Image 1 (cartoon, helix red, strand yellow):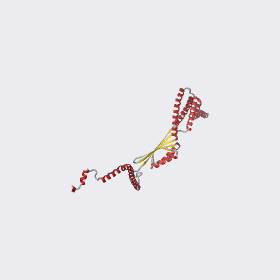
Image 2 (spheres, one colour):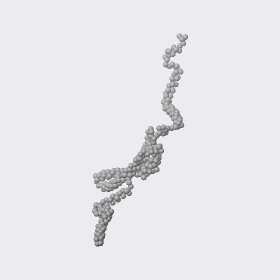
Image 3 (cartoon, helix red, strand yellow):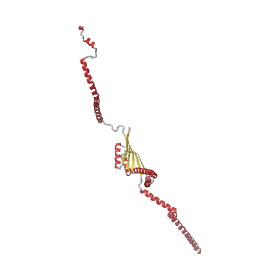
Image 4 (cartoon, helix red, strand yellow):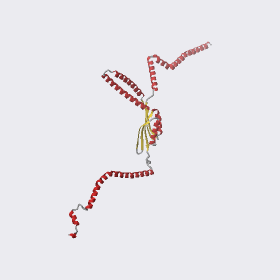
Length: 318
């Protein structure tokens, strides 16, 4: 009997030892899980407060974020350009529609050219459109096309260049102000000449910077849209060919014009002959009258007188 109790006691002891040895393992594993879960937070905290490098990095990060926010808030300076190639049903009507759409959006036509070949007519147009109406105008133009052949849109961000030019212009104006003050205080001619040369150079640079700023401002406020349009002409029905009635009317008008031109030419020719005819009449009429009188007095004034007497004698009188 006591053997059974001893076996039960040993078994209970072993079970108790196993349970007491498993508890620390459980607690350790749970501690490891918690450490793994929150370790990024502890590392971040040690980075911020552990060393000077962490503080400097956070300051740089904050400065960059502030600068990025300032740039985001600043209005971007972007130059937009678009080039469209399309096929239209009627080139003249398409041009009128494009110009009307440009005027409606506050834009204007810069350049226009047209040419005609055997089978098609082509037109090239350049428009300046306000930046805020750029995409709206493109949609309006595409509606006038029978077929869009290509569409190319580009944008160039010049914000950095614009800000840099403004900073340089501000610095140059400050230099100009100092030079003007130095010119007022110059005591010798040599000093005055040196300051004048420097001032002229600075003012020239200021004008260049202002010109570049105006160019960028104009290019960013107004976008450039270049349109290449073409119209195919059918060979069996040439554009502009008149009908039969129109051809008859045109031939009649041309014949009347020819007759009118003929009589006009005669009148002009007669008017041109009047001065020489008057001179010829003044000289020729007296000569003609004198010749007629001479013929009446002497029918043959150039014949010798002896022959005239012989011819006048009667043969019986000999």
